[in-house]
Image (cartoon, rainbow, N blue to C red; front, top):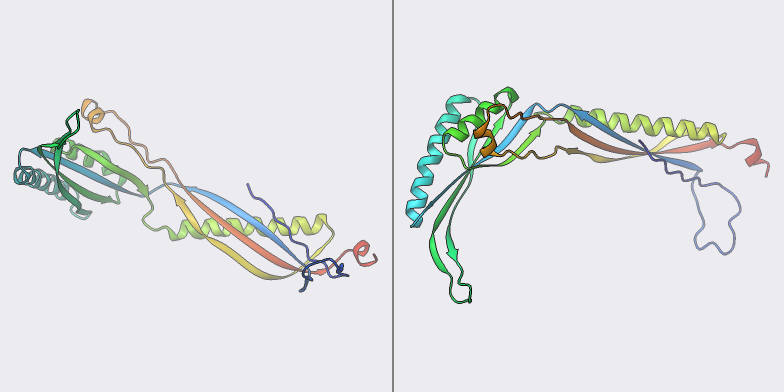
Length: 239
């Protein structure tokens, strides 16, 4: 669907009360909008490993061992994939008295996040299976993306420009105007929208049949075209 914005600047007598006279050739401006749906060919997921212990060192050591097992399993499964640790933190766990007062430290929690960039979507379920079997506690993020976004962006921009051009021609015909040279092209950076997916590890552990569908990625583009009007209709010029 596209919207059309028209700006007709007609040469002629300017009324005295006009705050600013209009200048320049008569022109028409049109807007084209395109939404392109494409299949993703890449996935990014953040796998979380959380451990808790009485001391910060114990929580950290347990987490390091568990995350190391996860990394080794993933790298064995996906030797050419990008796999790295992107976050690690250790924080105290508090108990807050009901009547206020000083909170008490009950223990410590260590949180490690391993990021996997997967170019073969058929391996996604195997990656999650490895994560569940090696002690991962959650999937923090699962996004389906494009390995190369440029072709999709170019197609969306081309579609939006084509819509704007068709709109200009249709308007000129209906208003009995003649389009002149293209004066200005304005485009906004195409926006790529990939809805985030939620992965419940507990459900996956309970069933091997839970599907993970990548769906589609939407690429939005907007283009504005401004054309000079080189000839007005007989009914306009004779007034």
